[in-house]
Image (tube, rainbow, N blue to C red):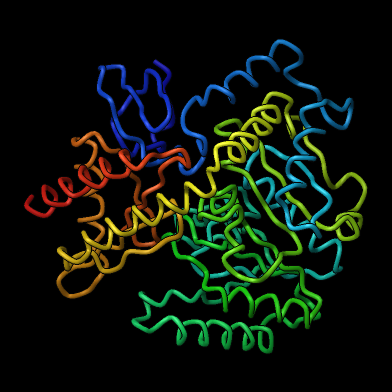
Length: 418
């Protein structure tokens, strides 16, 4: 009998029958509060009626219109809609299917535009599993090991992970920027460095927001050395952090912005945005793809952006994010094994430690698994697997946050007692 690859391990035993909003119903009739959103994908909740209607209508018109062969209206509309929320300097867009594809397109563009070979990524970043994207990823060896040689020309600089270092944030920022300068002086000369790539909030690396001063330091160095600053907003973008883009918690603007995940509420589409002057430096034929900018996915993305605007979901993510943080801080206050609570908006996490302050993967896994028994779906992350992340949809209500916190509190108690 044919089966799925044994490497595809489910985080929960749930087999879904249907879903709506913040809720998933299993084939056994159980109802689960979904605080995973398909790893930050179902931004408008499961099966938002307007997204469903847009996709259904589009499938009756044309499903696949290869966009370098014939253009289609959903992609034109999507480009206009994205122009309303992108930084104004980013006035040219290339569409692909996945975050990894968009990441690879961004580094290809940076190298072609500058004529330089090297890319500097940051420790704990996750940029994908394809060969080039995996070379940029240091959120865990499982993403980049066992299939060497991976892409060359990549160098990893420290990220200001203050909790891990045992420092205050300002010390961590100073260290990370100082080490980046040292890397530029000792390993990758600015004359060889095409781009910096960083997540405004580390995703799989542990839900660590990049401090504004750190991002501003990257922007300053990129300007000084004519290095392309690439912001991977695959997980942090589209309202997730309580701002439309994760980098908007700082004063900077990127040279290239990458988006995917929550852009189409579950339909596969990704994009990079850059100034047309920069995008024009890509070589002819270097951008394309059979399924990129699919008509149904583009229609769903247009509907998603309209729902986010009309239902004020960025504001809701900010308000509900504060409610979630208050609840998580309360849990931390009564549980010394929660070493840190962190995140922005509806991208929050708890890092678990032992009594000795060491990473506690066992407890994080136990909490995530026991939560399923309390009908709450969560995920772990972090290079050491000791972080539980909470990712509600942007549509989440006050009552659902309160319910989720109650179930999380029960799961913590059961996991700790067990």
